[in-house]
Image (cartoon, rainbow, N blue to C red):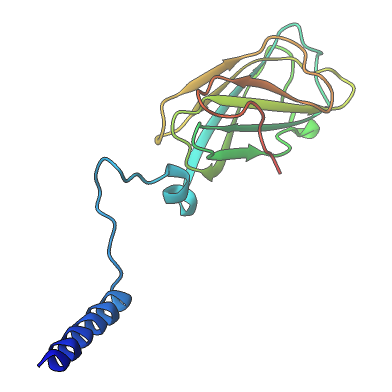
Amino acid sequence: MLKILSFVFLLAFFTILHAESLHPPQPQLGNNFSLKPNQVQSARTCSYTLIIKTSCSSTRYTRDQISLAFGDKNGNEVHGKRLDDARAKIFERCSTDTFQINGPCVHDACYLYLLRRGSDGWKPEFVKINSNYTKAATFYFNESLPDGVWFGFNLCRGRPGSPSPH
């Protein structure tokens, strides 16, 4: 009888083990489980409107190469590579330029960095980020940017202070 009970127990154990391997347990949403937004949103793309005002104390126009990176405290980051275009007369003194860019969905942008490469010394007044996905964020510069260095603001709590533009 003991052999039969042992056999039934082992058979039941292997049946349960096999059933769990076919259907692994699903996580239960609760206090101990959270999804990181950058993992969930990695497949999503959002559209952003960037409004960049060039300072009235900037050079009359610039041939500098201007790039931008902004993001949130969860690691979602958007890059605007080479926003400049000398032929389009953007980034002129006292002007406001608007750009449409797409990128990963950022929730509450809390950092923004600009990269300026060139010898003209372009000086931004502010950069405003608008999107249907997140509340608007404005970053005020009103100073000349160093050449070839990411320069900006990180107002995030719990995030390292430098961008990781590619």
